[in-house]
Amino acid sequence: MIKKKNSKRSGDIDIQIGNILRAARRAQGLSQQDLAEKINRTFQQLQKYERGVNRISASVLYELAVILNIPYEIFFKGYPHPNASSFRHDLANDEIELLRLYRNSSPRLQKIIIKLLTIKLEE
Image 1 (cartoon, rainbow, N blue to C red):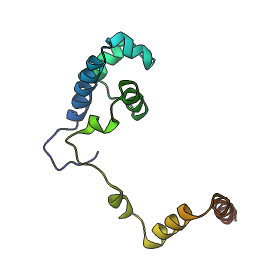
Image 2: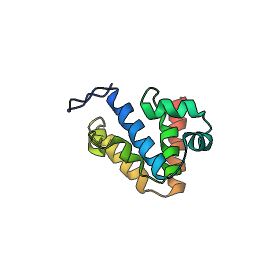
Image 3: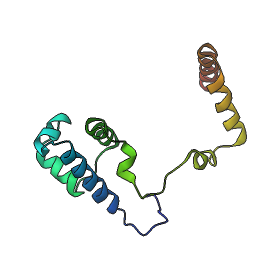
């Protein structure tokens, strides 16, 4: 579980996502049935999403954002934003440098690097 610096309970985010989902659906003039069909779910499942009873998977949440034409980040409004710098704290400096060099290299060189690393792992 991610520890938050604010006082919100872990289930609060599910309720918030549901409330935002409901508001966005209504703003688009869609019924629960209409939206449920677009994401291949029952309207009962969509009701549970909107009430925050059931959690929404990341892929479905993204799909809903696309269908409703809203930024997916809006579902998490008010929650701390994880950023790239927190990710890099878990990496050693040479790992960061390797990743930087890999990303800045040509696709051909990237394939060679992967092949080289794969060969070394098999030994």
